[in-house]
Amino acid sequence: MARLVLISGGCRSGKSAHAQMLAESLPGRRAYVATCPVIDAEMRRRIDRHQQARSARQWQTFEEPVDLPKALAAAAGFDVVLVDCLTLWVNNLMYEAEQQGAQVSEEQMTDRCQALLTACRAHRGTIILVTNEVGMGIVPDNAVARRYRDLAGRCNQVIAAGADVVTLVACGLPLTLKGG
Image (cartoon, rainbow, N blue to C red):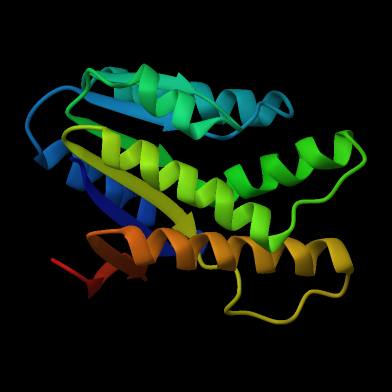
């Protein structure tokens, strides 16, 4: 059964760097599951730069914007799997539903997170999940942004409840909230 670590924080808080440093401190083969879709040329360059930096450190990258349990199954032979990030995953789920004329409810988000936790627990080794704390600022001015904030918050709560370790990163400094 996997050891599950959730690392959260604000944008540019240092959470991804902390997650990568933690993953690289662990022995064995490492996989990186990227949830970010390529939406423009600048994003493609950013993704390429990150992939090149990781490949020099023997990371295998899997790109999966929606089906994280499938990505974890594909990374079954790896000792450490880093998923970055859950908030983009929430965005991608919302976009996919919108393309089908639907919306993601908090109950559906809970179900998707429970399925992700089940997939994590089936894995051996360590799973590190990165997420953003998006609900610590102002209330968004439109319904879609408020639904996104609510779904991201629900995701974070469900995953944190199932995680062995939860770390909040602020100003580049990690604070352990659960486990250790």
